[in-house]
Length: 312
Image (cartoon, rainbow, N blue to C red; front, side):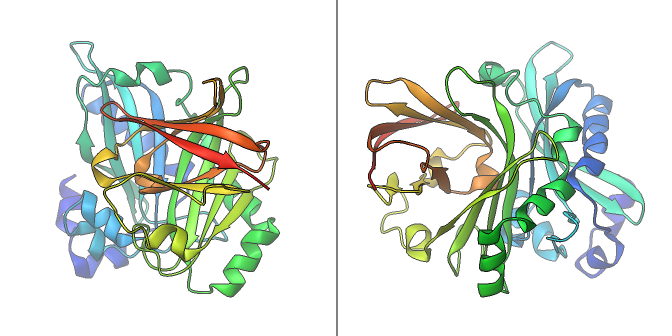
């Protein structure tokens, strides 16, 4: 840690940091949690970005001094954020977030913040645990590259960057097992203030097979919200994708979203990290039949339900 602090200056960051994949840094985050006295159950989230404003918000001015360059060819970046869950010495559930960097060839984990005594995640046990084999970001970018919508977007927006990439737990129906998916957002500008249309992609993360599902979201759907402190769901009616805008005071490190029938039957659910999705969350609805649905958003301190109409 002393070595890391000695090198944390704006002039040196870009010279000493080496890129690495998501899976390569996981062990360092888990080891750091263990050394701090946490009995580790596993990692329940991961995030990376090319948007320095997000990292600056987490680590003071540090993020603005980092040189981020996510590679859409190799799936590497210079910073990955991991949430590690476990129990303290007095058996309280806890979640700690770590930023992991690679100094030349040595990995270092920097604790960002934690939630001692957080037991509200118990309902997600078994759904959010994501083994290292699910964190192969190099596989994720190969699946993206095979998608024609992704390739077209990158050609039209040559200056687009990775605004956010995080692992999401998806339950496609009430009877199916939860599946890990990458939630990827690409565009120009920043995650909270995009300067172009954005591309929202969902990429299966359980193995090396499967293909990405990408949806282009027009700029007005995300950046021109008239009241940022209000809940909105647009477009509504929706055809392929609906954008849920979450007020800033309702954001949390972990959130759950459920899509239900008008009678309350859950037909799809998502466990995601708001840090990776921002305050504009894309919900794919192309598989839903025409009709009226309920979209439920809840965290440890917020619950909200909105009406969604699917019409084609």
